[in-house]
Each structure stands twice: as C-alpha cells, then as structure tokens.
Amino acid sequence: MRTVTRRPSAWAAGLLAVLTQSCFASAGQPPPVADHDAACPANSGPGALRQTADSTSAECRPGDLLPPLTPDPAAAPLTSLLGPRAATLETEHFAVLYTAPPAQARDLAQRLETVYHAHVKLVAELRLPVRRPPHKLAVLFFESHAAFAEHLATLTDEPSPALGFYDAVSRRSVFFDFDSYPPLQAIQAAVEQAPAAHRERLRQKLRRRRAALELSVMQHEAAHHIQSAIGLIPTFEDVPIWLAEGLATLYEVPLTPAGQPRESVNGYRLFEYRQLHADHAPSREQLVRLMSDDAAWCGGQCYPLAWALTQYLRDAHGLGLAALLRRAATGAGLPSDPGARRALFDKLLGPIDERWVTQFHDATMKLPLEGTAFAE
Ligand SMILES: [Zn+2]
Image 1 (cartoon, rainbow, N blue to C red):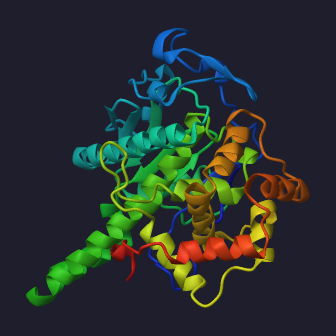
Image 2: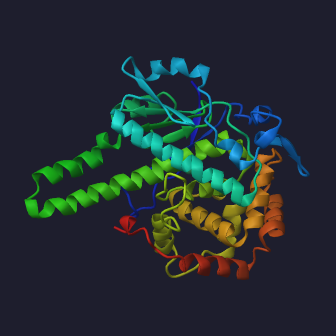
Image 3: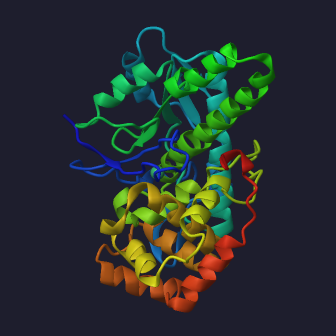
C-alpha cells in the first residue's frame, strides 16, 4: 500500500475548530519530478522557451499558462474511483471528475480557475520561471463525505480528518460536496428546527462555515496542486514546510474570476496570528528555527505564522522571496541542512535578527482584519 504522509495542520485548539484541513506530501515514493521538457507548447512566438542566467530549465512566460490545457488521455480510468455515475466537467485548466451535484461541480471548477489565474499573477509579479502543465489538472469531487473518507482511507495508513487534499503522488486534488459534511448538516438541521426569528442567524453561520471550508480547504489544496503543476514547487522536498504552506495560504482569500483578491489579506490567518501573538511577537529563536528546520513545524499553530511570514516576504522582501522560489522552481532546491538554510535566509532576506523579527511582527499586526466572516 502506498504511503502518504500527512502534513499536520490540525487547527489550534479553540481556533475555528470546525475547520480541519490537511495537506499531503508523498513519502516513501519517488517524488513527482517536474517535467521541464514539457514546458511551453512552441519554440517561437509568445510561448517561446527561454533560458535564464541561473537556470538550465526551460521556462515559460506567465501568459503561456493561460491557453487551455489539453485533456489527459490517462484520466479515463479514473472513473473507476468514483463509480459508474461519475461525470466529467472540463474547464480550461482542470478536469473535474464528479459524483457531486452538477451545480456544485461547476462552482468548484470556477473556484479552481480563479486560483489558477491568481497564480499566473504571482509568477508575473515575482518573475518566476514556470512550465506549462502538460494536461488539465485532475480533480476528484465526491458526492459525500463518507465516499471521500472511504477513498482517503485507501491512501493513508492511519485515520485522517482531512476534508480535502492534494495528493502529490497521483497529482490529483480530492474534495467532496460540503453539503454532506456532518457538522454543516447539523447546522442545516438546526436552521430547519429553529424558531423563525433565529433562522437567519443560523443561515449566516452556515454560510460562513461553508465559505471558510471552501477557502481553507479547496483553494488551499488547489494552490498546492497548481504550484506543483506549473513547476513553482516541483516537489515538497525542495522547499521548507513553512514556505510551501505559507504560499498556499496566500490563496485562501475570495478571488475574482480573473484571480484578483477581493480582500487584501487572508482574514482568518491574520485573526489566528493575532490570537496567538496578541501580547508578544514570536521570538527570533522560534522564527529562525521554524524557517530553517522542518522538524520545528508544529501543525495547526504554525499555519498562521507560515502565512504571516510569506505575506510579509511578499510585501517587504519580494526580491528575496522570488530568489527563494526561483531556486525551487529551477530545480536547485533549498538546502535541507538547518545551518545552510539559515545562512541562505540571512543572505536573501536578512539578516534575520531581533530588528527583522520586530519589523515582521509590527507589519503583520498592522494589516487590516477584513475577513470578519472568520472572526467568530
Ligand atoms: Zn497545505
């Protein structure tokens, strides 16, 4: 049986406990290798391959990611995973195999496209090398939580509370119709049984919880999928956990169809960060250890810090962030040795001293908390 190792991401106790997300990284398997040879569709015109001074990888311009991708001829056997009632919905960049209601599948597909377009903007902004995925990105969308959990159990050795995941081994994202999620069904039942005066409040609660799941699970996992598919993070082993997770959390915000954020920052990650660090900044030791040593990754409580770090780098150290991501995207990777990582971060981002940490914390605390939907 294949081994899939869960990247722990249980939520901090007391913080949005209804939301459980998880991320997967392959282990015990050869990591998926970015196929840079399959980069751009043509060697001339807008899609022309080009080389960079620090890379031998073929790379595309961000616009090369936009033309529709071709269906994956190997995807047909996937129907056996969802049963004979499964149908396929194709968008320009995704192929969603689903048993969920068609309207939900359309909503999911549109959501995935917004995250894809948001990534095109990111690679343009940071001038990152990318590759054009060889095929549409495959997504499984189950009609029920039970069917999803049954599928998940075939991939994991231990029970997992995941509510969606990107499987780097099969290169598929897997989700289910949140209307079938028992905690949301319980709220729906409460709506129906509540006195009329209380129903609207409960309906709002249901909408908020569902929206939070769509952002923190669907868009988060879609971000991992896209970052892998376009070669931004060819393998999870190439980057520190905080950076891979932080980069995914940037996309846990409502997006326009063109991939433009509707809110300037991730509201509930900022809310979590403020809860955890209301009275004190993270210590320099804590921050440096998290950044340089994957063994320091602490699951749920590390997500807001990973988000805050990545958001800060994007805002204040864009060149350094681009340099880090470029190393991953061009196959050079980041050093795994904590000391070597620390030296690299000092060189590209720092030095990461007490002053750096204070500036990071102060900048994060000053961000506007717009995501009131998460502050319950
Ligand atoms: Zn993740």
